[in-house]
Structures are given as structure tokens and as C-alpha cells.
Amino acid sequence: MLRLGVIGTNWITDRFLDAAHQTGELQLTAVYSRTEEKAKQFAKKYEVDTTFTQLSDFFKSDAFDAVYIASPTALHATQAIQAMEHKKHVLVEKPMASNVREAEKMFAVAEKEGVVLMEAMKTTHLPNFDLVKDLIEEIKPVRRVIANFCQYSSRYDRYKEGEVLNAFKPELSNGSLMDIGIYTIYPIIKLFGQPKEIQASAMMLDTGVDGSGTVLLSYDELEANMIFSKITNSALPSEIQGENGSIVIDKWSDMSGIHLVDKEGHKEERSLEQLTNSMGYEARHFAELIKTGQTESDINTFNTSLETMKVLDEARRQIGVVYPADEK
Image 1 (cartoon, rainbow, N blue to C red):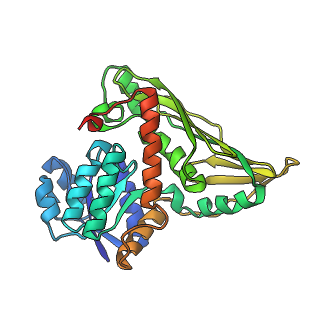
Image 2: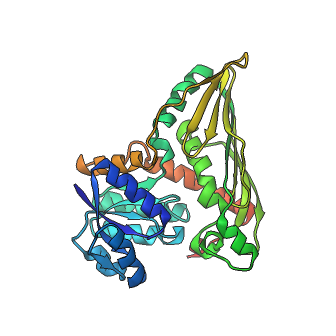
Image 3: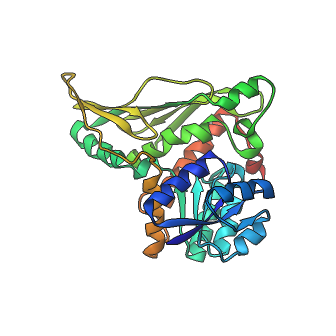
């Protein structure tokens, strides 16, 4: 059983720990939070006694072997590097860094220290993602992809009332592109590689981050259109269009509700059964990497994370989103 420490005590950490527990491979043994009250309150839920409010003490601790980082994006690089320099394996929430420069530094430290570093993009680990790769062979050549992920944030209501929470703060490297858009972009990079051209547009908020946006990736033989939002919902599915049919995907981030539609319009459900908590696959894979002595995932590779970050950087340049992390 691998001992796990966590940074971040929010809902996503709860969800990951549920998935980790179900694998039977990872056990929570240490919790970090900026406040003692939150750290102890969170640890109590999982019957854990070891808590920290100082990162330096947390990373020096021998109470855990690997760390799951679910802090704001602006903190990912610094915290992951500190962890790796203390020989801790790292699973860091998406996006793994604020920009390409930070990501490249993280990769260099991981290679130097000989520890696992993986971006926690769950989508690419799902059975239905592998199914989609197989179905692409049936409909190819692919000419167009429409990846749609629009999810209204409850924090936007408070934003409209004058309270700016973390989701809309540029100092934390946030906004719809980084928080939601990455779910549409990362799988496209995994499926089709680096694009030839990137075009981006967005609806900007007064804080300097994007509330919603669109990114168009152009390849030699196909175009991929990514639509994302934190200020609207969408009931539309996503679609991969080929000359010999199309793949309709009801929920892109979970790759659920997959249908194959042939050229005549006949629709057939092809979805595979998946774990209710879809983070279970990435949790199991992370544990397996550590157990087998590997230092880089063959699914969420450094290259996929880097190419995704390049798209995010260029999209932000075009729409005018600048973070304090970019100016360091």
C-alpha cells in the first residue's frame, strides 16, 4: 500500500481519495492545509492523525511516499518541485502548471530526482477513451472534431454579486480555458498531436480572465473546435466526424454516452461500462507507475502535457490573459 499525502482540502480531493481508496493501492496518511482547523477537519474524515500547516515540514515528513496536489494552478509548479526535491512522487491536478516554462522545469526536476510526475488528466485513462481511438479507425479519415464542455460555475453567481472567488482570479492562473478548456484540448493533443495553427477567442471578465471561449486547432487534414465555458451550460454532445461516419460523445470529459453513426445515419451505442468515479483509472495508473519503478506515464506523457501547455499559452496570448506567473 502506497502512502499518500494531499495538498488541498476541497471537493476534488475528496473525489480523488474516494477513487484512490477503491483501487486498494493508495492510503491517505498526511494532510496539508494553510489552516490547522481545515487540515484537522479534513484529516478526521479519513481517520488520519498527521496534519501540516507548513509546506516545508510537510515535504520533509516521512509519513508519505507520494503527494496529490490540488491547490490553485499558480502553486502547482512550486509545490510539485519542492515535493520532488524531497523524493516524493507527484500527481498534480490539471493544468499541471501556469505556462510552458514552469512545466519544463517540473519535467527536468522529475528526471533529475528519478520520481514519478504525472498530470491528473483523467479522460485519457478511461476505457471509453481507448474505445474512441478504436472507433476512429472505423470512420477515418477524420475531418472535424467538436469538443464541447460548458459548465456553469456556482462561483459565477457570487462573482456577479461582487465577490471574486478563486475560479476567476488571474493571480491563481485560473479562468475557463485553464479550468474547463483543458479537458477539451488535452485529449485532442493525445489523439492527433501538435496542431499546425491555433486560433482562440474568448469572452473576458473584468478580473482579466476568460469566462468562456473557443479554440480552433488546424491540422493538415482536420480541424478541431473546442468550446468551453464557466458562465453557461450546454446540453450539446461532442462529435468526431470522419468520412465514413461519426462518433457522438454525450459527455466529453468522462467519455460517456458514446454512439457510432454510419454514413446512412444509423446510430448505435458503443459505450463501455466505466467506474462510477472516473478518477479511479488515473489513481490506479499512478500507483502502478510507482510500484514498477517507472518515472513517466506512457499515457499522460511529458510530451502530451507540454504540447497541451503550448496550446494554452498561445490561446492565452491571443485572448489577452496574462498571469503574474508569466512575468516571473
